[in-house]
Amino acid sequence: MTRNNTGASIIGWGETDFGEVPDKDYNDLNEQAAYEAMEQANVTPDEVDGIIAAPPIGGDELGAVGASALAEHLGLMPGLKYGSMQSIGGASHIQHLLQAAEAINSGLCENVLVLAADNMATGLGRDAAVEAMAGAGHGEFETPYGPLIPSMYALAARKHMEEYGTTQEQLAKIASIEYEHASLQPKERAQINESKTVEEVLESPMIATPLTLDQCSLVSDGGAALIVTDSESAHADHDTPIDILSVGEYDTHESIHQMPDLTTTGARQAGKQAFAAADVEHDDLDVIQIYDCFTITVLEVLEDLGFCEKGEGGELVESGELELDGKWPMNTHGGELAQAHPGGPGGLMHITEAVRQLWGEAGATQVEDAETALVHGNGGILSTQTVAILERGD
Figure 1 (cartoon, helix red, strand yellow):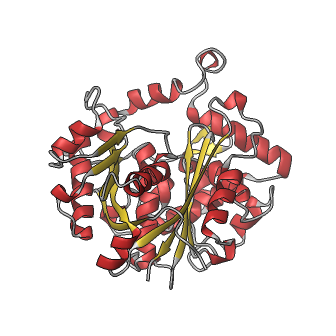
Figure 2: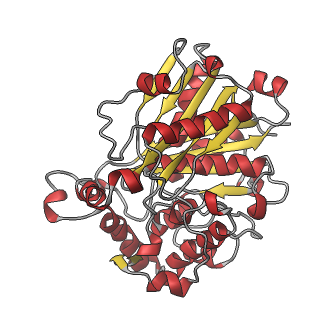
């Protein structure tokens, strides 16, 4: 029997358009997602007393935009009791869930809006994106040597291949699975609406050996939002709340040259925290959403979370267990490789997809009788690992 360790539940979600959305800036995208989430949760703006958001990366020249500025734009003022705008990259969405639960459990807030959106594709642009990737490393020991973010992840991929015999085909299979799931989405919900074979993934341009273009996350406009409230109210006032059973986090390093082991992430410790707190086993999970900035991230995290032994991730990928009819359908929306990736905010779509699955609203990729989901986040260069376990409330 599981138990809700956070005391908080999700009662509404919203998503924006995805891909290139030139007519919407940072504020507009957040507004679209936020109001959709509020409408679904049957919560009015004056009932939202907390906001947790991700800062923009895109080129809107927003300057030092803060949570209060975004809240004012969304019509949540006056009356805001808690506001936070901070990022730990692709691990933020799960940490934000925990922040929302803490604000609610403290009695500070009743309804917290968690949202993340950005216009990286039309706002940031190619040159600024390359510049951002070039400046991500340690200023003294990495950046002078010219590594981009993809090459740092490629370093981990090469090490995994050398140590465990993982193949390029196995890495490409991860992308192929996700492209298949994205191809089943409505066109407005996925930036890429086509399936790709392993061969096609491998034939895409090489970015950083062994990672080809199709094994790297997209550059997108888009975002998502959630309404989080206390579980007692959620169960009393809503038919099927989504309980946030547990959250785990573990950091191993910041700079890639400080990573203790290129083949092992902190997802091992974060996962253990989350599984233990929720009293859930791997066999209890119906769907999993793994942060997928690059295919090697997915492979290492699957191993570290215990879905297979270390070094056997490639075999798990080939087994079919991560596909829609498998044991653990993964990234059923297409993830950041194929659905959309508006920077770190893309992680929030992993949560909204889990909610859709648990509510039975996932359409062509719906997993039958899905009740329990695991969602993962990855910040930095395999640095910060976060894990949440969600369950459909009765």
